[in-house]
Image (cartoon, rainbow, N blue to C red; front, side, top):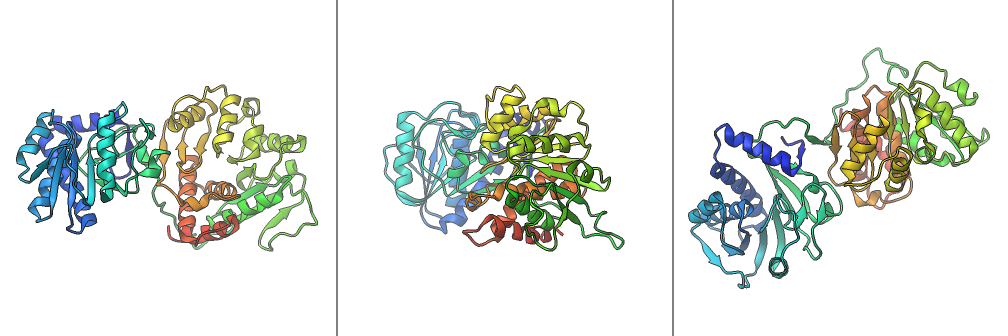
Length: 465
C-alpha cells in the first residue's frame, strides 16, 4: 500500500472492503489516529499541542490523536469546531479524557493539528471554519494536517477556496491521495508521511514512483548489449548534447549523436557523431532507442528529421520541438513504442493535435492523451504525471524546485531514453527517468545548471545498483 495513490472513491472502497472483512470503523480510526499521533509527538517534542476537530471521521482521528498524546504525558487540548456526527467520531470523543475548548478559545503552542475536514470534502470551508483555522494556525509554531489539509480537493490537488494556511507536515492516512502530489496543493503540504491502517491491494490504483532497482552489466556485456541510443540533433545542438550527457549516466552503453548539423563543432570525446545521412544512420539494427526533439527546431528540416525518425520502428522518446511538430498522421504506420515528455505548453499542443479537449485535472489529461495517441505520456513539471495507454498512472514525490532552470527537460528526456535503450519497457523507462532526475537534483548543490544536473545522473543511477 505504501506505493499506491488512491482517489477518494477508491479510498472509500478500500476501507469498506476492510470493514466487510471484519475490521470495525472504530478500529480503523484507532489505527489512523495512533499512527498520526506518533508523528505529532515527534514534531511537538512534548510541547503544547492543539487538535482542531471537525464533525466527521477526520475529527474522530483528531480525538484519538489527542488522547494518545495525553496518555503520554503531553500537554494537549482539543478545539471542537463542531459536535461529532458519526458514530466512530462520537466514540473517539467519549474516550478522550483531556481538555476541550470551544471554537472561540485562543490557545497557542508548538503544534496545531488540523483534523477539521479530510478527503471527502467537496466544498469550500465556511467563513467561520476558515477564520478559525487561520486564527489557530497563526497562534502555533507549526501546522500538521491529518490526511489532507482542510479545504483541499483530494483528487485534483486544488484548494476549494482561498486563504488556506500552509502546513509543515501532512500525514496521509491509509494511502496516498492525488492531492499529495498535484500542484498547487502539494506546494503547501510541507513534508509528507504515511500511516498504514491495513488496507489491501486496490486494482487499477495509481502508483508512487520509487527508487528503481538496476543491475550492473553481466560479465559478457558490451556496449551494444547495454543499449545503443541515438540522439537526433537539430538547430540548437546544445540541447542534444545535454540529453546525451544525461543518457550516458543513466545506463545506456553507447550514445550516438545523429543528424549533427555542424561537423566542425567540437563535442566531448566520449560522444560519437554519426555523419551518415539520418535515414542511413537509423538503419542500424543495433539501435535500442531514439531521442528526438531537444533543440530540434521547428522548420522544414526539423519536420523531415522527425518524420524519418518516426518511420523507423525503434522505441523513441519525443521531447520539446518534436511534440509541437507531431501530428497523428505521422503515427499511422507506427508500431514501436513512443514516450512523449511534454511540459504544459507542449501538452496543450498535443491535445489539440489529437483532438482532446484538455478538460479535467492533470492526471485525467495525461491519461486521455496517452489513450488517444498510444504513447506513454510524461506530463512533466513540479507534479510530473506518467500515464500509459493501458490506464496505468504514476507520480513522483515533489522534486527540488531548483529544477526550474533551462535545460533540465533535456536532461529528463535523455535519462528516460537511456533507460528505454537499456531495455526497460516504456512505462518503466519513463518512471525510472523521472526518479533519476529527481535524485540527481537532490544530490546536486543548488543552484545548479542543467549541465551539472546531467553530470549527477550518474551518481543517482549508482544509488540504484
